[in-house]
Image (cartoon, rainbow, N blue to C red; front, side, top):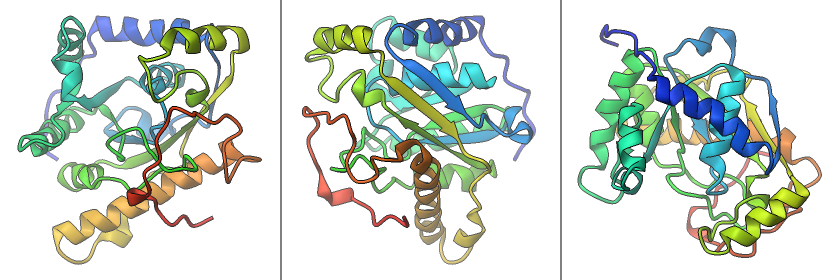
Length: 257
């Protein structure tokens, strides 16, 4: 990894991270377990998380603030095109991903540069809110593994659970009703950081493309392993079912457990 100056966190981003905990508090009871291993906390590190609800980014912001990590988020290009929000995202150093366009690969060198600056980069390897009928992580895109190849940064799995009980898949449709229900019930939302970085040594043979596919499989299995303790008692079907969420069997993975 080339030497670059250490990223200076914008004050606005530090403020927004702190505010995220205030936003989450009335809507959910946030429980964060493990925390980021000390040796990875100063970066560079790729935080690879599952994606179950539109509420996930706010919860992960709050969890990272609690864990003492300041992530730079890889987010869809549509967010950056939004007035005000897009300007805030750019100012705070987040990374634009133009999915389903010829420019999607442009995000990788930008992320590698962020990692060279000792940043933590938060990414959703699934590339969307997962549509596995049982709400386990679906088959990931290879971008996270390619980012690790390009940067040499470790990948730490992150699991979250319960955000679908706060804001459903269909939001902003039905958002007001969902928020009122969350304010009354304050469901438990859990975030768990992995015990260790993903061992990508098993993805070290074959062409770069084959290595990326193997690395993606290892990353998704590590997210599964991190998520399992959060889903005890609901390993097959979640207790809270998001009825607005469609099912897509095309990217369902065979899980190890």
